[in-house]
Structure formats: C-alpha cells, structure tokens
Length: 278
Image 1 (cartoon, rainbow, N blue to C red):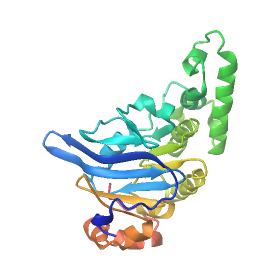
Image 2 (tube, rainbow, N blue to C red; image 1 turned 180 degrees about the horizontal axis):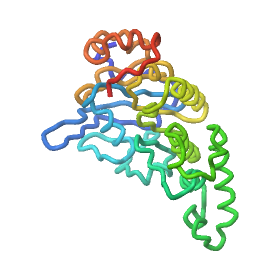
Image 3 (cartoon, one colour; image 1 turned 180 degrees about the vertical axis):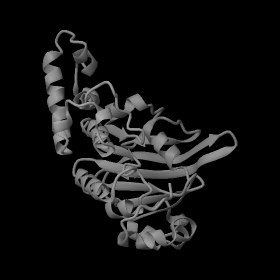
Image 4 (cartoon, helix red, strand yellow; image 1 turned 90 degrees about the vertical axis):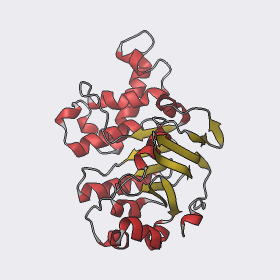
C-alpha cells in the first residue's frame, strides 16, 4: 500500500461520516490538504501521524469545530452544508475530548445525564430547573445515565463530583456521557492519554466491544492500542493522507515506517510502552 492507494476502501459496512477533498488553511499554513476518508458502521478507524500532521484539525473538522475551506462533509451519503458541534447528537454522533469537558460543580450522574438530553422531549435542563412535565423524563434520563455508568463499571461514583476522582475514572465519566447518547459514530480524541498500560488494555477491550452498535474513530499516538483495536488506520503527514489500510498493511508500508514510526510499528505488539508520535 502506498500513497496512491490512500483512498482505497477496506470496509464492508455502510459509510457514515465522509470527508471528501477536505482542505483547511490557517493563514499561509495548510493544515489539511485534499484529505478524503470515510468511517463505516461497525468499524474502528485510527488516525495517526507525527506532530503537525493534521490529526487534531481532522478531528475538529469531524466534530464541526473547524469548517474546511474546501471539500465537503457527508453523513450517510448526504452532504452537510455546515456541520456544527451542536448538530452532532441529532445526527447520531458523539465525541470525547482531551480536556474531558466535565462540569466540576455537577455530580458524575448529572454530567452524564447532560449527554442523555438527546433522548428527552422536555430536555435535561428543564428537569434540572424542575419545570412542569419534566419529572418522568428526568427519571428516565437518569436511569439511562446510570446504565451507561454501570457499563463502564463506575456506577458507584454517580453521586461524587469529578474533581474528587482519579483521572482514569474521570475519563470514563466523559466516555459514559458520550455513550449515553447511543451514537452511531463515536469520535475519540487521544482516549489513552494519561492511562496506565492496564487501563489502556481495558480501554482497548471496551472500544472493540462497541463495534456491534457503533463505529469509532480515534485519534491516538499509542501505537500498541491503535494496532490492537483498529480495523483501519489512516496516516497523515503534513496535512496529507499518505496511507490508509489495515494494521498489517500500515505496519508493512515502507514509506509510513521510514517517515513516521520507524521500528515502533514493527514492534508495537511486542512492547507495552506508548510510542509518542502525536
């Protein structure tokens, strides 16, 4: 596999989110240059590359934080005239961010229930303000949120505040808030950052277990995690998509190995140490 094959399809499910010829410029700097890729249902797509490769910009485009100067974004084959962050839940997309974005003055349960608002008619905030007609919905949303916390094994922390919890637990809270949306596509921005090797292995098992009900795109620099959980890997360098393939294809791609990852790719499965390259 070479750059010529960067847009080759390696998936079998229906395409969900698609980026076609996406270009993003900041002044005289091109952060992304004609990047085309898609994420299909039931698949895990990893996005990798060295510092400055454009991974964060790509994630921001997918989340609606950054509007591309050229190209188009599609959802299930339909072009989105403009994708904004508040559109994601309605489409069936959820995300986690490096900064977690938890509300420190709200309990863990309340934080997760914010994500469940997609399933409400009156809405979470109506329930929080005790507006008429919101009681039953509030109860249903909290039950849904507790189920998400239980799935991640952290239900006992529901009444606590995020600031009182270890970092790894707070990351699970942020993930529970994303999962309670019941998305078709989950976007993860460096989900393994700050985790121990055991916690990373647990995360990998969790991500693989999600594919029966959603697709996952993760931007990550821990190569052992990427190689173990991803069905497909997209490799960026200087804003260009230079390769797209299975972990084995990427591992054996001489251009990828020489330019970005060196021996780290070949030996990622033999080492539990994280490999920097984000």
